Structures are given as C-alpha cells and as structure tokens.
Length: 415
Length: 124
Image: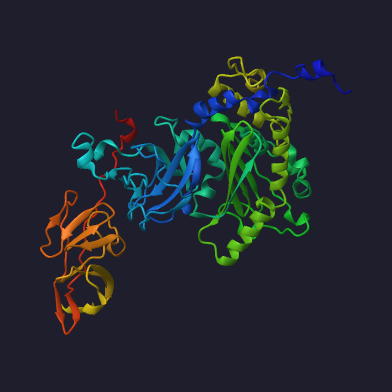
C-alpha cells in the first residue's frame, strides 16, 4: 500500500463496523467528562487490597471519578468506604494516602477521623460523633445524627480486594465479575494474600489505551521476553474469552521461563490449585487488570485524570504465609517482569505513551483498528471489540462515530 | 488493693501534669496548686492524651482539644461543653511521695454507635 493523501487517510477502513473506532474516544474532553459520570460513577473499582488495611483503624485514601474516597477498617473488622468529604464545608477530611486512626493526630483524636478545618469528627462507621461547640452554634437545629459521612458501597471479594462503587444501586458485584473470576476463584480465595509491591505511574495517554494493551497479546511482538518464553503452539491456542459487562479473560498456558537467560521456572511457588508456570489474565471493564504469572499476582487499576492522562496503580501480591525466602523469590519473579525496571512493564508504558503522543486533545481524529480475527485466540482483537461494544452501551455513543447513538456493531454481534 | 507509688510530689510542678507508669498502669498526675489528683491519662470525651492537651489554671483542668473541663478541687464538671465526669484514683502523699490506690485500671466507655442496618443503601 502506498502512502496516502489526506482524503485517503481519513477514509473509513475496509473492515466491518466494530473492527475500528474513532480516536476521538481517546481525545475529546466532553467524552472524557461523560465517561467519569456515566461509567466510573457506577462501576466497581478495586481500590486496594485488604492486606493494606490489616488492623482496625487502618485507612487508605483514593479517588474515583474525581470524588475523594476513604476506606477504613472498623473496630468490628469491617472495611467501609466513605466520601472523604466533610459534611460541614466540603473540606477534604483525610489528607494522608494511608495510615491509622488508632493514635491521635495533632488536630484529631484516637479512633476517629477528624476534619482539621473545624474539628468535626466521625467514627469508623461514618457516624458524626462530634461537632465543635455544637449547642452554641446550632442549638438543637442540626443534630449530629443528620450530618454523618456519605457512605459508599464497599465489599471485600475475589481474593481480598476492596471494591467500591459510588452508585448506591449498582449491579451486584458477584454478577458484575463472578464469571470472569471463575478461572482463578479457587486459587485467589484459597488463603489470604498480601500486597508486597506498590507503585504508580502517571502516563500521558488515555486510560482506555492502557486497558487496550492489557486486553490484547498481539503486542507481544514488543516484548522480546514473551516471544522467547512463549511463542509456541500452546501460546497461540490461548483463548481470549469475552464475558458480560465488557470483561475479558485470556486463558492460560505453560510459560518456559528458562528460555530467557537469567530467569527461572516459577513452579516451586505456584499459587494454590495451579499447575506450574501458568499465566492467566483477567481484564475488567472499565480499566482493571488481574494478571497471574505462576508465583505472583499483579493488579492494575486505572484512575483517569484527563483525556490524555491516566494514573495507573500497580500492586504485586503473594501469599500471606510466605517465608521471608519465598517472599523474596516472589518479589524477584514479580519485579523482574513487572517492576518499574522489569523486563516488560516499561515496554507497555512506552507503547501507550506513544499512542498518547499521537492522540491528544486537538489531534485530528483517526481510525484505530481492532479488526484481527483469529478464532478468539490470543492475537485476536476481540477483547477490544467486546470492550468498546460495552463502552458504547454505557455511553450511548458509537465508538466508530462518537456523535451517533450506540447500536450493536456487526462484528461484535457475530461473536 | 494496694497503694502504688506514682512519683515524688516535687516532680510535678504546680499547674502541670505528669504521665507515670504505676506498675503497668498509665496514670496522669495533676498538681492544681493546692493539691494533687491521679487519673486515667486520657480525656473521657475522645481519648485525647491529657499529657498533650490538658492545661491547668485556677484549679480547672481543661482538655484543649474540645474544651471539656473539670474543677480538680471539687471534681465538678466545668464549662458548657463538658458531658462526663473525670474518674480519679484515691491519692495520698507520704514523705513527699505520691501514692495511689490502684485496684484495677480505671477506664471510660467509648462505645461506637450502632452498626448500620442491612437496608442501609435503600433508606430514603
């Protein structure tokens, strides 16, 4: 194919509806704002893992769709989530990323969360327990019972992850993700896990471009490590399976780690109930990824910051009962591929940052192709087609023509 | 029941508080000018450490966090904010040594409010 002039470049590709999308879904500020409202305010987000809140009064703060969120463990051991917003004047209540309320703070008391602005206080169940100079200011007009925190749906599930939903009436979490997790349910729920690695990256790209990369393995051409340890018949037979609500699971095969110099088999530390050196990938709409490579689990969660900016939080998990030696080995296994200086992660980040460079607000819209058809195996792009059909439903926009209302694309309906 | 040594009276200057360990029980000793008191080391309101936030003036101990206050001479509650009395240990001074009757550790109730009901997210 020769190079193309502008008219040719802008023409729709000779593929079926659903096999390509318009890059405006990655660049348009109005579409981005609408995604936060329509998708992220009703989706289940795994904001952290229970092992990051091991003791009563431990907390973590985060945000979903620009809303500040705090999760904390109560004295009854329950993990609850609230908006991290004071009901008085809208102050951010807790500013630290994580910590414990067990000990007091200069502007707070033990076992309560305190808004430092005017010293209003709340317990771990979100009850308002103190209004400074309450009677003098409000007499009996505004009792504490009427100014509790905004509590959010929160469940600990699927291997101890803490799931939060800003919508009070969302689809049930089991119904939302039970089926995609089925392949690893027994493994992840066999015994307590523990986060041993956390880092985050802020990347100048759209959050969906990151999720796209997790949804397809065709980009293993970028990963030299994956090619030498994986490209074989069993690899190409791996299924890329779609599930309701926009989720994808890439089935497993046995990775030959010893084919790459400096790497070793992970068989000795396989997660429970798994054959050695397996590799599963669960991708949840709208941007979460659970990736198990034999001895270590990785979880990515996106927080979209703008059409061309995303924060990705990376967690690595092992088994809580690991000996120090086992833990160190798991950490090595995890970091040598997925750490900030690992073999693969930076390549993924280069890929999506390159896309972010060509697709930013103001870039001319162009076609992004999702048209590989390989019997729904690992290099098929059905994962992205499935994702964008779901996205279209939530947004009521057609991914190939975002100004048009959604209709089921022919390519996806056929699958 | 036994009298337990806290500290020497000379170690607690007038209008100050001193946190001591009395055989494993944390006790705060207050010198209000005309006498001493021995108490649990926290404010009965919200567990604030009184060695950090307590001040004494004119016989009145005030927890500066939320202005709960008590007259240490009479143990009456003082000011508009205070809702609970202080608990104190019996105290005596012998040869400049302060002793408290520590039978068991005095504590306050800080019960959290009732748990949420199952229908929490369905309420109007």
